Image (cartoon, rainbow, N blue to C red):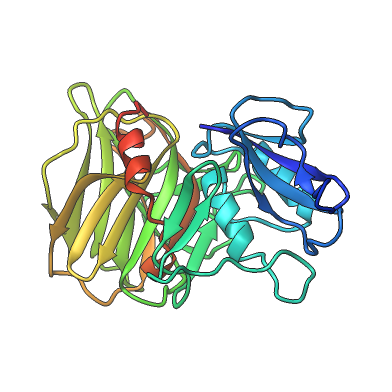
Length: 339
């Protein structure tokens, strides 16, 4: 991957000495102009270069799919805004869409191509999505003082077991199943839920997962993407729960759980897909049992109370109109990587 920087511009804007970002002396550089006014020098560019050189500007790394609080904070501080995304892969399109302006106070918004796709290029195809309108998104950071109640960004109902917040993460502390619902309706039943699964360790059987198409009642009906570990098992499975009865929807992915993987469940019509780090793990499968429900949540399980560690962070859910779709070449590269 290229090395990415937030870099100032140099030059005078003439034919002989055009404005260009610092770092443009390297070959095969590319940039995205984030100046509110392209007729003046002041402002910054996102620059991708093949060779690391920290004299260029603020270094944003060469691993765009890793969660980085430092990179998120650096971008927020430079532009005076608050980001939802925690990975550079998603921070850049968020800057170009959610934080863009038409009033000349910031860069102008990203526009769709003729095929209806939004695309961002930075050292190659960086990101693409079908649509970024017509839906809603909810997020939970768990960035608050240690608490027996989940939050602070969303209101949660703990339907069974017990979740707490400790160390700015959601921590499962209940015995048996701990199921928590985010009490915010999405716009449609075609939506996703995801979270960064920060830890899953065991001395007895443990499990962690995300749910979608949950309603506002205590009924245990939803789709679930689930990672489980015990002395003989380490894998990921997709389920539906219908009034508390569970049915597995596809063969188990025996890929080992790895700390900080992103687990996501998507429901799109009657197609249910389960993903790890943006790559399909189980499915897509067809299931027609659960329709209409607009809520999402998280689930943990201890066979024996606290016989291990279950923690997660950065919960996010949204309508599929807001779902990033990565390029084919990007997916292939990620599939060959050990997470």
